Length: 504
Image 1 (cartoon, rainbow, N blue to C red):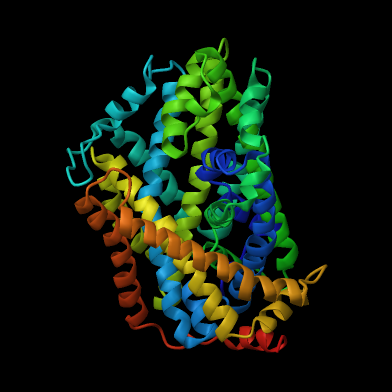
Image 2 (tube, rainbow, N blue to C red):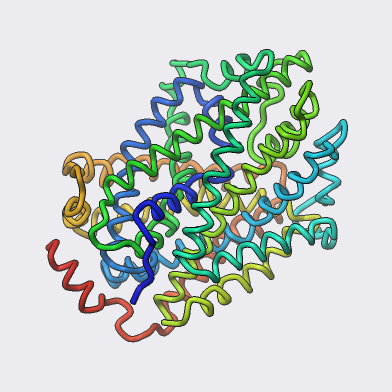
């Protein structure tokens, strides 16, 4: 019998734990600030309503009703759709091996926060700490100072994964999410009580209504939705496959999206309040010190922490502790995509599936504790997120929306829902609005990489770690799709078949 969550609350907490990741703390505030500030919240809200929530409902329903991870559930939807599930599994695998590196860095920086070990020049310290080489193909050897946190994170992830869904993933999220909220609350309170915190908040929220006329702002809003809600790469299908059939997925989708977005806004208040104080202390505009991604977390923010008049250690521990907890809960959710898919296809035990997932991921992730780790991560993340995820989402909506009966999925979703998903909204958004936005996003992102490369990296590095990573996704999906599966893999067991038939 398929394992299940202990409760609907456990599932929602785990889904929120997956959605609330590193990007919520460092990516959303910067994306908002650079795309119209407060005005960006309007296209972002529209993106949540037209893409985020409908896709969550669709993926929750597919996973719950067809009782499998992405490949199995899509195969049961239509035997010819299985390959897309394996594309999503391979995308998750690629994200897993580099996402772990960032979690390792955050764990190290929790320790550094107690003494502000990064000194007067956090940017130089970060580069030296990672032993960064000149390019992505010069490895520079393993950085021994990263080995202990590297092993700690892997052991923690393995312990959680081997314990299974209810005793591992669910328990970890139930423990981690409250800790994350407490740390974030302390960070926000500390931030808004600083002098000139309002300068940072004005930079993040000051509305530039003219930006709404720019297509790039709307594309950024839809891109953030996929990055933030963990949709289109198998997580939510896998998680929902462990739900009881009577679960209200419509309500669950609204709760997950609302909680995730609320956390993004709340965390952004804390981060940019402190950035505002830092800009004031240095006598420079906020936009001059505000950065995105790794730069904000490991270069800009340590500088801000050191400039605080008091409570530097507490602020640092709260910020990097929050990053660490958010990273761990997302890390296990990404791992679960692969574990579920392997268990479904080959009918092996949970522990063997975890081993099958973690061992190769562990070996490949060693690349990210070398001197080239930061460079490889930067390229890999850009291509997997901007092309891989966009293409995966686009294809999922085309296959499910145009070559399967979306109305049937809507009826499945509504059967146990307290309030129904309307036909016009659900089908209209998934078949038209979001497909068009994802199509445009995919085209522009791909065109940009083809014409301009990526950053200041050489074409060799971009070809190996950018286009090469996408090629690995495709090859891996083909191999796994064509591997011999257990008998009856693409069909439902009698009980589930009977349950699904009730919807038809």
